[in-house]
Structures are given as C-alpha cells and as structure tokens.
Image (cartoon, rainbow, N blue to C red):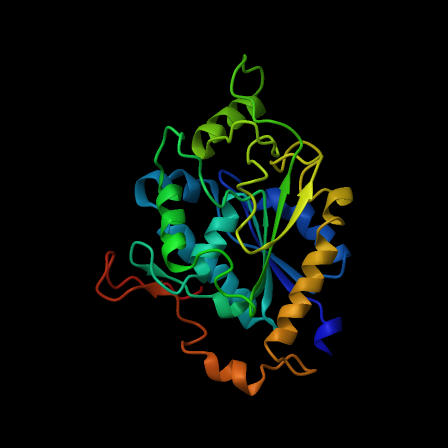
Length: 288
C-alpha cells in the first residue's frame, strides 16, 4: 500500500477528569471514516485526580505505553489525537528528556499529532500553579512547538464559540465543572474560545491550525470536537497530514521504514521506564 493511500491506527488520549468511555462515540466515528484501528488510552479519573500530588509523570508513562502498544500492532507510525490535557500528555510522552524521572520517548511512533482544545500554554493569572504548568515549562525547554517535524506533523484545533464565563450563579453540574476547569487553565481577556480553552492557547507554535466557530470544549453537550458534523471539518486534514509524514519518513509501498529513517532509531521499541537512578527507582514501565 502506498503512503498516499494508507490508513492509520489512531490512538486517542482523553482530557482532564474524563474516562475512556467518553471517547467511544469518537472511536466509532473514526472507524466509520476509514481509520484502520482506534485505541483509547487508559487514562482514568483516578489518574487525573492524583496529578496534583504526584505530577504528570505517571500520566506520561500511561499515555506512552498506550502509544507503544498500538505502534507494535501497526505496520505504520500512528496518528495520535489528544483532547484537552490529553494533548499535553501526548507531547510529554513524545519528549526525549524525562519529566520527574519518567521517560517514554515515543516520538518515532507518532507520525501525526492532533490536539483538540489543548491548552498549549496556561494564563499567568491562574490561581493554582498545578503540575500542568510545570509540564508545559518542561516541554518549552526540551520539545518546544513542533519539535519533531517533519517526521511528525502537528495539527491543532480550537474554537471561537464564545468567551469563558467566570461570573454568575452555578445552576448545573456542567457549569460547576466548567468553573473548576477555568481555575485550572485560566482565560485570556477578550479572546474567544470553546468555553474553556481560548483559541489562542489551543494553537501550538509552528503547527497547522484549524479554527472552528461553533464548538464546545467537553465531551458532554453538543457540539463538541468529535461530533459527527464537526469531525469532518478536521479529520480529512489530519489524514492528509499523516500521509505526508509517512512520505517524509521515506516509507516504502509496504509501509516499511526506509533505510535513512530506520538508521535514525536509537532506542528499543518496547522500553518505557523511569530513568535509572531516579525516583521511584527500579519500577518497570514496560507495556502490559
């Protein structure tokens, strides 16, 4: 199969305080649009809940394992989709330097990274200097912007539906969650967004960007980034860019790496673990 007609194995990394089941409709829609396979990373509510205490290192490893396992099952590098904070987890997993002693280094496994409503920076007025702030500072040092281009291509998707709402009574659970998350990410005055993430911070410097005008941030409530009539506005571009990355890697018609790309690989395919000598020491991060 030639690179320009290939179809990807997709991995979805969900957002803050979500469960994989929130992304099952998205999985069905991607399969209906020709994805070869779609895996949902096992990022669960408890993983996000303990982030404030243990940082994003464990999320990095869990997301990295999901990417590695999917890559081992696929003849081609993956198309990875990160929703909200899942996009940050994906970037951390791709980095080649550790965060808090954890390293996944899966950039070679990812031909295209798509982020949907991901905050690629946090506003300076946020009241909680949470681990996500430190994680983005780490990425700015070790893998800024589109660090792994052209072998990996980057597509960011944001929305200009409206302004984040900070004031007024809270009358529903979704409004309460939105208020909590606004405290987590902050808001840019005067900048429109998806109700939570401003379109400006959803754009990663150097990445191709799609700006939608009518999309909400979360997986509950419509329309959101993976609804039927919305997904068709970014999925064809993501697929085209993924195929472009395959060509940049010099893949042959069977999907095998060309000599130059294979020679650039410098690590085992199945090793993800904390860095030797760091804390916690000796814990294996091999995919299960």
